[in-house]
Image (cartoon, rainbow, N blue to C red; front, side):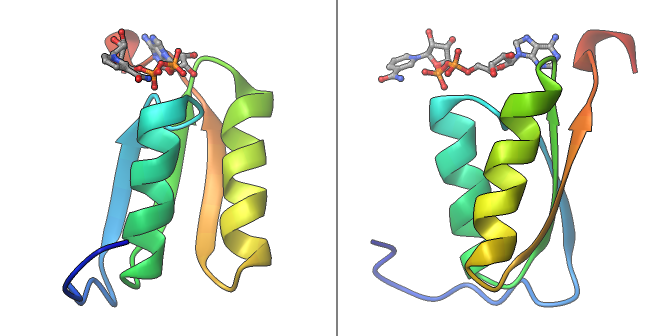
Length: 71
Ligand SMILES: NC(=O)c1ccc[n+]([C@@H]2O[C@H](COP(=O)([O-])OP(=O)(O)OC[C@H]3O[C@@H](n4cnc5c(N)ncnc54)[C@H](O)[C@@H]3O)[C@@H](O)[C@H]2O)c1
């Protein structure tokens, strides 16, 4: 639970390692603040799973397979 509301409407955020536990939760929190979230992860299936959850809850997200050390 975020004790205050940060307005990230119209912002686009890239979350590296977003298919994992901690950054997946960060990605969800950012989406709840209105950000459009790009979830980058080695594991495409994990990134897509987090994006699907955000989209199902009314947010906007995309899962992208990427090695963030080679961008
Ligand atoms: N979960 C915890 O309670 C906890 C507690 C303390 C510290 N940590 C540390 O925090 C970090 C994240 O923890 P977590 O539990 O979310 O881990 P996790 O393994 O669930 O998530 C990490 C994600 O990063 C992705 N990843 C790794 N290297 C990548 C790369 N080069 N490019 C793209 N994606 C990449 C992995 O595929 C994975 O999905 C780890 O270093 C962990 O040791 C976690």
